[in-house]
Amino acid sequence: MFDLTTFTIIHTALSVIALLLGLVSIGGLLGGKSVSAVDVPYLLTSVATSVTGFGFPFVKFLPSHAVGILSLIALAVAIYARSGGRLAHWGRSYAVSITISVYFLVFVSVAQSFSKVDVLRAAAPTLAEPPFTLVQGGVLILFVLLGIGAARIFPRAPLLARPA
Image 1 (cartoon, one colour):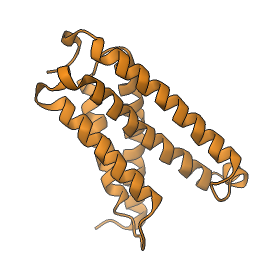
Image 2: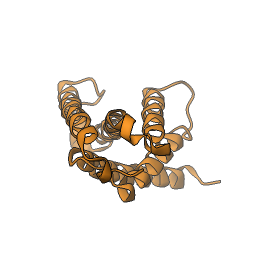
Image 3: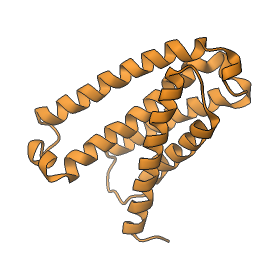
């Protein structure tokens, strides 16, 4: 078994890879297509990120656990929509669920940044101060807009542009 430091490095690496792939995936959806070379690795690394998040020691249910569960639900919808040729009928659900799952990665990244980067921690030591709230609110608005755009554009793209 890994020690906690190694486990944290693996979890963080998976998170960064998933986040980057997820942003590229959203870009593809906004361009009207799903790119298997990006979307499939995104789904795999994002599921791995959420699952490994439950491997850290904890005594009680934490907000991070709620985010992990919600992310896994969104990812389950995306995986279901993508499999078995369902994308033609589930395109909007796929676009929204991918966007939601990437939002959760960004949400956690912002929270981690505010808790680990000195200048950010000084601005919002309890993560309840206005700087943290404003940044998270801006991220939420951005992803709502991205999700709306992806849900409008992706399902209307020609079926030939999407994987079976």
